[in-house]
Image (cartoon, rainbow, N blue to C red; front, side, top):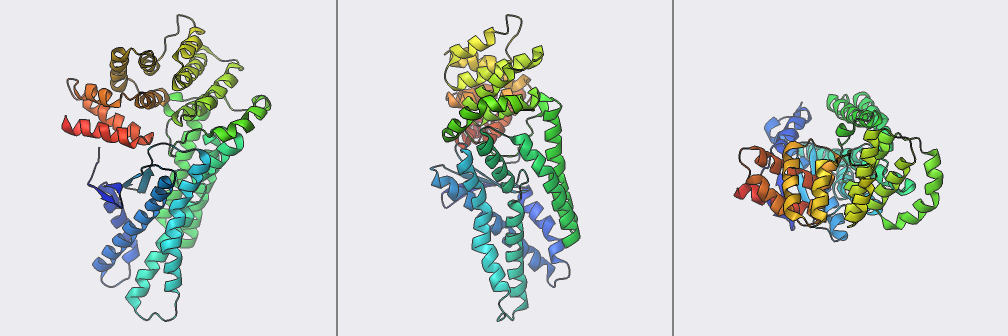
Length: 418
């Protein structure tokens, strides 16, 4: 894992990965073309870009603090990522997502544009500096607000869809992202002649298309190719959902695979009630044996999240004795039934042997919920050979994805101490 140096700024922990400066410098090569003193302007571009990205990410971080979260920032190859301790409900997530680009626009973009256009400036170098400040912050802020996953605007779009429909609508957000990314690439080429803009826009469009098709075709193991931060359910929206749920079941044309994917997305957001609603909807459909098992496991995970393992076992009992629960669910059920040693042992084997996917990620989240991450990491590192170490590194990555920053730090400490 590429870790990089870590420091704190205004109380916010920040990690800088090696690809962050490399990517900025590569992108700055075309910005210095035709300018005198190219080394000076390359350094200037690096500083302007780094400060602008930090200001953007601190906009997210301060919004997280508004909701009593302890944020952490990772600066990596494509910019930055800001995490909170917990995932947020859609309405709060919209505010956090919008805070980054709006902060860069208000603090740097607009003032830089006004200063650049001031007629009193006579210093050419200063004009070029101001141009870089306003161009980067205005253009990047506006691009970031486009409804394109994984950009902030894509997260905002997804949150709005979830508020409107009462449940996750990642597939709809992907369908919106695909033409948005394609049009962004076309506009970048026509307006700026930017090959990077084409690669950026079309690359994101293709990634969203791949994710959409994986879910649409029922590739359940591949459907966890996600960009957006997960959010928990918002209890305020449940009243709207309950009144419309019966009508929605009749008109919902999503395939069982899409519904199962949305159910696991809800589990990752810790919206267990939404996952149970989706499970109920699936039970009304005619499913094959494999989809029946996925549906039962979806409901079982949700009931464990609700701290009701008896209900989870009742759901699984409907499948009969021939259907064996997946290893991640078996580990979680053992832990929920206070069989701690057995649960941790099963989860260790799950982390080493089982492929990545929704059940494994949800199991990690529930182990964190039950306060067992330190022991799980310790047992993984203590395994003979390198598999346990690799699994511990993967565990840290999964916890970051789940926005469990403190648990991820715990795993990191265990890995470093051996």
